Length: 335
Ligand code: AQP
Image (cartoon, rainbow, N blue to C red; front, side):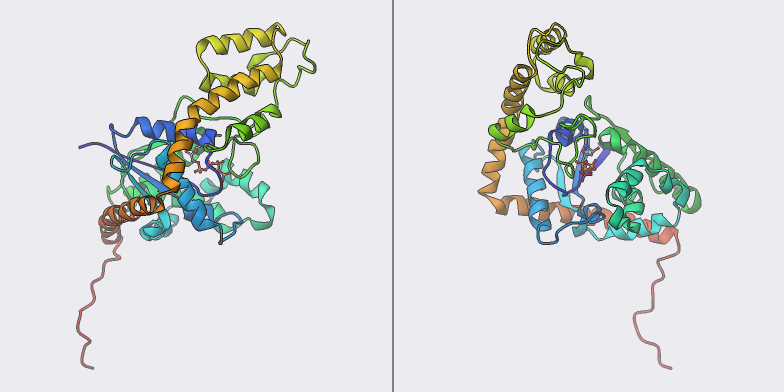
């Protein structure tokens, strides 16, 4: 029996190369090794302001790009979180074993609360509990994520332990699995690349847009003019080269920068060409899928059916362990 793997992605905007390098590329590599379940986590996405009219399209877009990036629906299950209601039921139950103090320590909550001051809601606060429910509902043991999710995974393990010690050994403790690009910085070189910040390169953006974005991306801040020697280690463009360029090109970029032998634009152009080349098949496949929207919807429908079955099995165990399985007599009594 293969171990089960679960991971999710929020439909909060365009899937970007941070999501790809930090998570999706790794998901694709792990397809044969584990029984893989991937979710478009729309219940998470509503913890920040969103336009309800855009949501269905966003969900379908994320599913399309995931499949285009290599999540073969014949080798994994892909579904929409809100199509399996048990996620919210288990999240509520897990709320009752999660200490508030643990949630208060979550750095993602602090960051998002600071960015969305006008809407610091209880859902945003309890986000990691829903995430624990997403994973534990399927008794998943492996969770491939970016570095930003490691703290949430620690909490998921803690929640599983607390539940098990109170109600019996139901949940395995899930472990995070990081890729070799666990934290891709945004084009602002200041923040993690994020869908909700305008600092990303989208996976299906055109070569022109990729170049336009890269050409104004922040580089080594100490290198003010072309003739200044730079320090590649503090340049985000150099770090991006490491994910997309050959060893020769990475050395060329480092040496050229240090000696002022190349300018930043020259360095960015090579990076841009390499990114365009790596993303071309994903862009092509996404275009193909766009012409066949019924296919993506079928994948999501089948995925939800499979996950509902698994989720219902777990919830039966959970309810029974907690004394929430009282079976009422089917016939009304005669008073
Ligand atoms: N910059 C990143 N570097 C490496 N991995 C990343 N991930 C996200 N950003 C980076 C990983 O991608 C997976 C899906 O992320 P998510 O959609 O669940 O939410 P997120 O981490 O909050 O991603 P975003 O893009 O920053 O979304 P918004 O702007 O909506 O908050 C996760 O495994 C994540 O670790």
